Image (cartoon, rainbow over all chains, first blue to last red; front, side, top):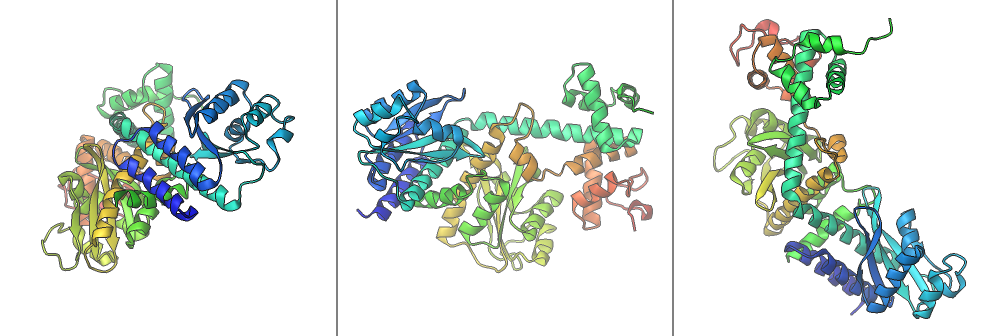
Length: 247
Length: 246
């Protein structure tokens, strides 16, 4: 199958798996397998950052690749880690055997496993990096610009797919959080208006007065705002609590 | 093929992945993919419009604003009825509905409007609004795209909330969306002016906006800037001569 058609098939397969409830690991394994077909590499793997921030091997196109990726994490050096830490693609032009200065523990093991080139593409999400796509080949040499672009497109779609799946799994909680955040915000804005009218304060000063009052008494801002709205807290009490301006 | 559709949409969103698909990009993609004149996303909860996540052009913004002010329109219906609401000819509608919304939307240049609920699982969090400057139905492709887009958009909105600290709005929503907080500030001020509840104050604000054919947020801005005060004398909807700035 020509490269273009393979790439499209992969993207469609990835997208199809999104329609139903899909398994992220399954999706990323598919991504790794297709990278091998599409990008002219012999092995591919995906590492994702755990919530604590450390990388985990999530998918690999072969067992040898998985072992090498685990070694990379253990030895705390290698293209994937460099990519994850810098957020930039790591595209190695040189022979892996010639970069032992850069990765003294990882490079010899990778060469021993039969690889002479290693690349990593970042999985970006809103300015942060959530993981990296690793690409390994038995011959030295750079990825073509087309392969880099195709690999990055696969990594980007996988990133959005992961995000969409995570969100769907937590949707009830997130909807509640969104509504709670909007409700408390609305109450705070209403209370600002009540205070602004009763005390002649600007919206900003009204907010500062409520915040100051809440902090001093260790109350939640939204609760203070509710008291202002239902008139159980007099505007005078808040004005008295305001920090004095230098006269 | 559903997968191909989703691929196309995710690919468009992924094109902005370096900065993250913020609210504005979301609406652009919705309008581009369906080849509509404009798109907007409204957030709703408990039967009430909460604000606009994004709108792709000023007419889309107005379509959202009208629905927010008037409480009726394709998004409101799509959300409440939990199904797509299609009006392919807004100037000559088959069914007469949205008596306040329709003439204003037509005047602004909308000739066909479509609303799709923003559903995640069984829950709807708002609606996607598409409009076109000439009449005509959605074709099957556009309809199918809109359904997928509404699902992707719903998840994308929640994704923007995902990393927010407890009780706070997500940073991308806070920065890129318009929840009309000024309306709630004004409701607080008017409640103090009238010695009434904020709920009543909001009704008075809406009545005023409707009577003068102004956006609710614009009326609210006048209140907050202290250019407009409400007094006890006029009943809701009746506007005293001193009630509005010249």
